[in-house]
Length: 519
Image (tube, rainbow, N blue to C red):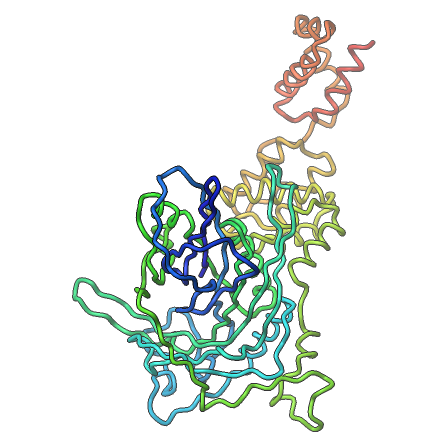
C-alpha cells in the first residue's frame, strides 16, 4: 500500500504532514537525509513530536506528495508457504485448509521451496543483495481470520535488501519526453497471508474463509523516493511487469489515495491512522481497520523454523543434495529477459520509438500479439507498430476488451497488412476491412475485400480517363489550383476517389492529375 506524505508550502515556511502507515498527519521541519517506509503499524518516517499548528486557509498552500510503497504480491505457487494445501482461486470456502492452516496444536511449518526461489529471483531482478542467511519471525496480532494469532514474516533479517527499481515517466506534453527515475528497494521478505472475513450486515455476523490463510506473499518495500501518484503508479506497473516476466506472481495491483487525503485536509478534516482497501466498483479507497492505537506486534523469532541458508556456486557444500539447497547462481542463470531489456531490444530491432516499446509491454498480451503479426506479414515493422498501437489497441479500449478477447487474430491482421503492402487496397479500405473483421469473426480480409469490392483500381487507362473527366467537370477547382491554392489538388483527388468508390490509390491519382495539368 502506498504511504504518501504531502508537503504544505507557503511563503517563508515549509512543513510536512507525513502519513504514518495510512495514518495521522504530523508536522515537522524540512527533511534531512532519506526516510524509509516502515512495516504495518510502524512509522514510514522518523517520528517527530506532534505539534499543534493553526490550520492554513483553503487555497493558501500547495500540497506535494512524497510516496513510498509497501507492496504485497501473491507468489505464483501451487501450494501455500508453510503447508501442502493447494492454492486455487474461487474454491469453495474452507476447502483448501490444512491442519497447519487452521493452527491445530502440534502442527509444524514446512517451508515451500518454490516460494523461496520466487523471492530470490525477484531480489536478483531488482538488483538486491541476497542475504545468505535470513530469519523468520512471529508478528502477533488478533484478527478472526488469523487463527494462530500471529503471522510468520521476516522482520529482523529479510531474504533480500538494498535494491533499486528503474522506471520511465513522461515529463512533458509529448509522450517522447520521457526520463528514467529510480526508487530504492528497502527489502523483500516472505510472509503468510491471512484468511478472509466475509461480513454479513443483514444478519450482523461475520463468516471466516481460511482458503487464503497461509498463502505465500512477497512483501516489497520501496523507499519514499517518488513525488506523485503518476510516478507511484508507473513504478508499480514496472514492478508488475517484472514479476510477470519472472513468473513469480500474477501481480494484479491498483493504486489510489493522494487526492482523497488532499481533499480531506483542504476541507478541515484529519487523516486517520487506518488500513484502507481499494474498492474496484466504487473507484476509491474504503476503510478496513482502525489503527489509531499504538500496535505492539511483539515480534519474536519463529521457534519452529531454522535460519534460511542460501548458497552460491562457490559456497555450496560438497555432496549437497540439489533438492535440499538453493543455489543463487543457478537462479540467476534462469532469469528471463526483463522488461527494460525487452524495450531496448524492440527499439533496436524494429526501429520503434521508446514510448511505443513501453506501450507494447504495458498492455497484457499486446507484445505477443505484435510479434505474431510480425512473423506472418511482409509489411514494415513501423507499419505493424502503427496498426497495433493505434487501430487495434484503439478498438480494444473502445470495447473495454483484453487482448485475449479480441475478435481479430494476429493472422487476420497480418493478411490485411499484406494486402495493404502490395497495394491491393487503399489505407481507407484497409480500415473498412478491419472494422468488418472486428464485427464478423470467421471472414478473412480477402473475402471482405471481394464482397465489398474494395480492391484498388488496377487499370491505368481507366484511371487516366476518370482524372481527365474530373478536370473537365470542375474547371473552377482547376482554376483555383492554378491561382496558387495548394488545397485544390486535394479536392480533385477526393472527387476522383468518389468516382471510383474509394478504389483508387490517392498517390496514383495525384501523379496522374499533376501530369495532366502540366501537359
